Structure formats: structure tokens, C-alpha cells
Length: 76
Image 1 (cartoon, rainbow, N blue to C red):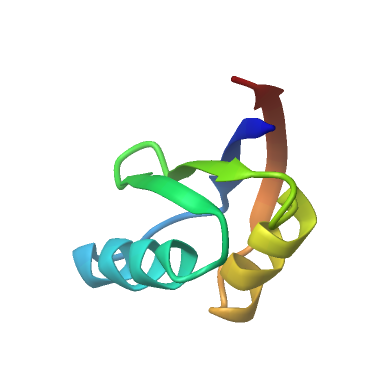
Image 2 (image 1 turned 30 degrees about the vertical axis):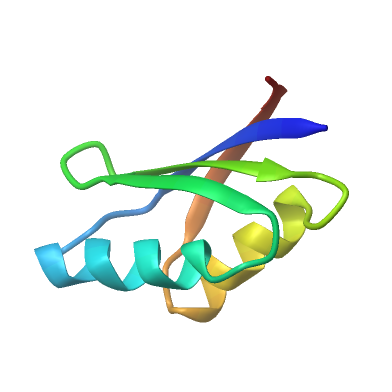
């Protein structure tokens, strides 16, 4: 089933952060669409929950060195 995740980050300090996060999340299995909103410090992605999970995607962002403040997941 397709789901949408929104991750609120602590902060994004530069535009290269945006590129780094988008590239890492896009490489994950089942991820169809990723958008990082720089000014809002949010990551939004659509993913197939049979191939990935919200926890795994959050871990990808955390391992890049960004603190995820909260996560919201909804069915599409």
C-alpha cells in the first residue's frame, strides 16, 4: 500500500542539505517521490510500505546527521 511520510527536521542550514537528503531517500526501496522543503525543514516522500517503512526512512535521514523532530504517516 502507498503511504506518505512527512518528517519535520530540526533545521536545514544550506541548500546542499536538501540535495543530500533527497538523494539518500530516493535510493531507498519503494520510494516513488521525495521533496525536501528547505524553509519549512520538512521531508515529504511517498513510499510502498511492502518495501519500506517510516522507521527505515527516518533512520536514513538521521544517519545523515539530521534530527527528525516528528514524523507523520498517512495512507494514499
